[in-house]
Image (cartoon, rainbow, N blue to C red; front, side):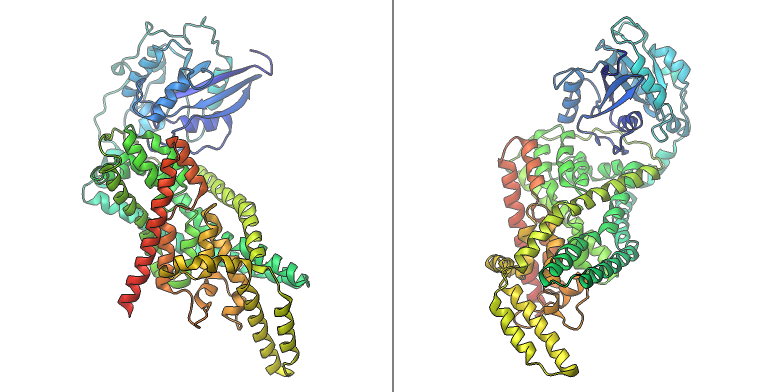
Length: 639
C-alpha cells in the first residue's frame, strides 16, 4: 500500500476508560468527547487521516472487558472487531491503561488469541507514576513482544509516532512481531509491575467522596453549585446580549419604514431569534461544568453512590450514566443505555431518560425564573426542576419494573477511574462546540420557526381594523394629550390585530385543554410549537410577546421578554402569568416529551413504535397532571 488511494482500517480496541477516544482525537485531529468514566463510548466512531500516502480509517470501538459481550455496546464492539458489522479491521491497536496494567495485560492475552495484526498504545503512564507505580515501558515491550508506543492522551505526545507505525506496519502476516497467535511471549504482571505500598491519592479522596454520609452530601453540593453558577456567573453576559439586541432592534426599526417589513425584521427576526441567544451563557456554563465533572472522574463516583438507591427501583447504578447524559440531550442518553446488560433495565432507562431536563429546556426555565423569582431563589429552583425529572424517572422506573418490565436485573461492575485534572483546552473546545451547535439551530430551525410564528401572528390584517383606528387617531387632539391618546390607540390596534390572527385562533382553540393549568393562549401556542423541538418554545414566546408587548405596557414598549411575561394582561385586566403559573409552566416542560428527535431515537433503539408512543403518551399526560395540580392546589392554598 504505497499509493495515495491506499487505505487500511484500524480498530482501537481496549477496556472502558482506557483512553481510546482521546487517542482517536490526537491520531486524526478531530474533535471528540473524551471523558473520565466507564461506558462513555457506546457506538463505533470512525475518523480518517492520511499518513505517508496511506489513508487510515481509525475506528474507536466501545470498551470491552473481555471477548464475551455482557451488554449491547460490548456486542457492537465485538461485531465490528470480528467483521460482522462491516469490513473487518486490517490492524488492531490495543489501547492499554498503564495505571491498571495488571488487568490490561490479561485482556491483551485474549486479544492475541484472535491471530490478528496487533500493536499496543500505552496510555496514562503519567497517572500510573503519580499513583506510585511507574511502568518500565522497555521491559513491558520486551515482555509482550509486540510494537508498543507510549501516548499521552492529554497532550497528544506519541500520537505521531503511533500514526506512523499504523501506516507503515506490515499486515500480511509475515511480521511475527505484529501477528501473534497466542503461543508467543506473554507478559506476566509481576515481571513489569513494581510493588505498590503507599496509598494512592485517588484512594485518599475516595475515602471522603464515597463515604456513606459525606459522599451524598458532596454530590448534592456539587449539583446545587452547578445550577447556582448558571445564574450568578452568566448574569453580566446576559445583560450585554440583551443590550446589543435592544440596540440592533432599534437600528433596524429606524431604517425600515414599511410597517409589515419592520414588524417582520424586528419582531420576527431580531426579537424572535434574540430571545434564544440570551441563553447562550447559561448553556455554555452548564455544559462546561458537566464536562469538568465527567473529565475529573467524579461522574463514576456518582454512579457508585446512586447504585443502591437505583437498585431499589429495579435499575442499576449504570443507569445514571445515560440519565446524566440526557441532561445535555436525551438522544445520546438513550443510545448510552446500551451499556446496560439486562434488556429490561435498558428499556426502563430508555423510556425514563427523556424525563431528564435537557439543555433545550433550560431557556424556558431561565426566562420564567428571571421573570418571577429573585436571583437568590433561581439557582435552587433550577436545581429542583432538574431533580424533579430524576425523581419522576425513578418513580416511573419503579412502576415499569414491577409491571410491564418485571424480572431480570443487572449488577454494577465498574472500575472507578483515577482522578485527574480536566484539560481546560478540551473543556473549552467542547463547550464551544455545544454553543456552535445551539447557534446553528438558532440560525436554521429556530429562524424558520420564528418567521412562521411571526407570519401566523401578523396575518390576516383586516382593513376594517386599520380604518377604524385611523379614524380614531385623526380625531385625537393636538399636543401632549393627543400624543398620549395616539399611543394608546396604537397599543389597542396592535392588540386587535393580534387577537384575530391565525396564531391566536389556534392557541384559543387548544387553550381550554390547558386552562386548568393556568396557561393562556400564548403559552398554549408555545406548547404546540415545542413538539418539533423544545428549542422553539422561547423563540415562539419571544415573537408572540414582541407583537403583543404594547398591549401589556404602552409606557415601556422596550422591555424584554421577562418583563412582558410579568405585565401582559388578559381580558379580565389581570396578569396572564404569575409565579404560581410560571411554576406550572416549568413543571410541564420539565416532564413533557415534545421532541421528535428523542422519539425517533427511542424507535431506533427499541426497533418498535410501541415504546416511543408509550413515552410520548405517559410523559404528556404526566406533565399536564402535574401542571394542573400545581395550579389548582396552589390557588386553593393561597385563597
